[in-house]
Image (cartoon, rainbow, N blue to C red; front, side, top):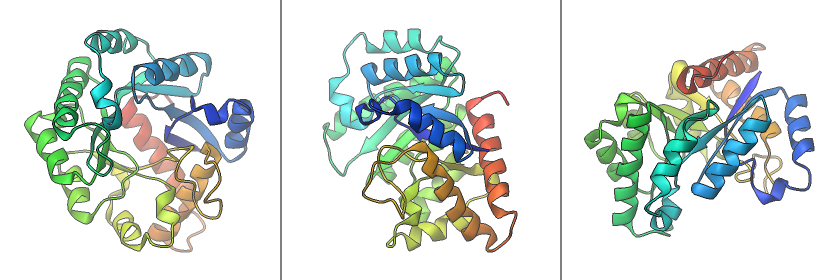
Length: 260
């Protein structure tokens, strides 16, 4: 019923009860997971998880926080990992000028390199963009990233970036942030996103939605994100949640080429 398009299933916080996490997700109606790579080791872990679970798919890539850590042989190893049929995207990649864990120049360089990797491999991009909206759009345009497309994950920026992303053919994915009390502007953006460009995610174990905020997040809670979107888009319609589940799952399968 639901696809969690962005979750970090390899996170050590799941080591004690990972199977129960899968069980609770299934009970909540989650049928498919996309587990995310943030550097070479986590990308390798994501592929291993996907290999061992029929309903788990993987992305591979280097998060902007880790951009300074890229070694010369990583790209050849990513190309090898991408041969696995369960690898569905390059990500998460992009720019994060909020924390600046890696120098901005290096972030931009690695972002460009990974866009070219995605184009070489014919895979979509999973984009992380925080407080770097103009630079993100500029790089996507200059590198012609629209040739492969992708998703702005955990979208939490403004209407300007939302429209620019949509204009480039990208999808927008929303997380538990849309349930937070201070997220009214973001909820307004949700209402404007075309149905065929909308995705849902948890970004678990981070960003746990209300009413579980402060606890470890997990994929079962993606249903709460879908419920919030259903309310925002369809009000009290009894079929709203089912519609959100169906359209976001269809969108995810189309973008990531996941079989039904």
